[in-house]
Length: 200
Image 1: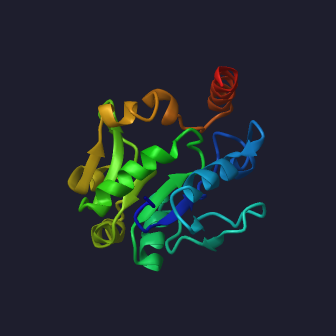
Image 2: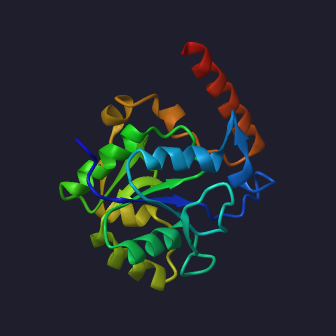
């Protein structure tokens, strides 16, 4: 059975201040962070788009610049929803261990009627590995118009959570939701990738 129809939006914006270099070019194992995220989204969608930031030379996906400047990833999600007209599965490039199965679970929930579905682990939403329906666009746009750029309030109001049991079905939550923001985070990810390689 093929996944429900959706566009895959790879969020490539951000300033990478704490990393000290563009995250899109950071290597983890044999692949860049951007290529890893692209491969994950490609398992769910026939088309992946790059949203925000700059085009990535190694990835031949269509690129959509953020319609709003300096509004964070919420602007990227607004841009993707505005341009595509279908469900949008989002993945930030600095989440290298999110499995396709997690994103598929969020997509199925949205296809069955949820406005947004995102992981929630230890009381915290993870809005950058989630699925957004078109019904999320107007509330998101209204928040951005008011200068409210965080996504957590939006998810508190509208999202269906992918809770602990569902997360554990696809991996250890602390690993699959690992976010690469700093060189220290990258070291943790490299050790985790090495351990996974040895297991296989």
